[in-house]
Image 1 (cartoon, rainbow, N blue to C red):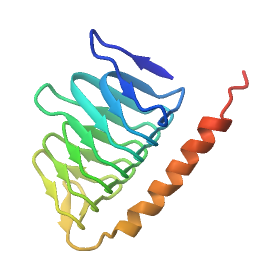
Image 2 (image 1 turned 90 degrees about the vertical axis):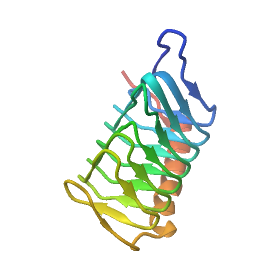
Image 3 (image 1 turned 90 degrees about the horizontal axis):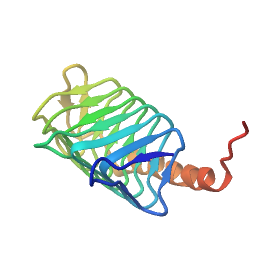
Length: 172
């Protein structure tokens, strides 16, 4: 895996986390227990910090960045889909950010909420607990998301990461 210190900032990766060899983790980044970072994901903690909670999946080609003023925080038991861009935002516990979505500065995705695929959550927007954010720019649809909709994906990725940690081997 490509894990880099930047000056004095070194990533802190829990021993049970899985970071795919083709993912990149730079600088002030913390990754919690049983979390997974998949191929071509980039977590770049250069100006500020990035924290990934426990049992959270950051899927292929996602980019997480931060600003000097605003960290990027992802809680426990979250699913961050493929090709997601998170920058200077907060995603609380048990939230799902769908494939291709963008969540920008100071936005807050509350627990047990969902950002739909390809949605753009603009600066300063809050997605309430149990709500869905859909569209460009995102609009809120209240009261449609349950923990069960998210936790199945969390469990699947925790198990998949365990399999990869024990069975992945390069053949070239």
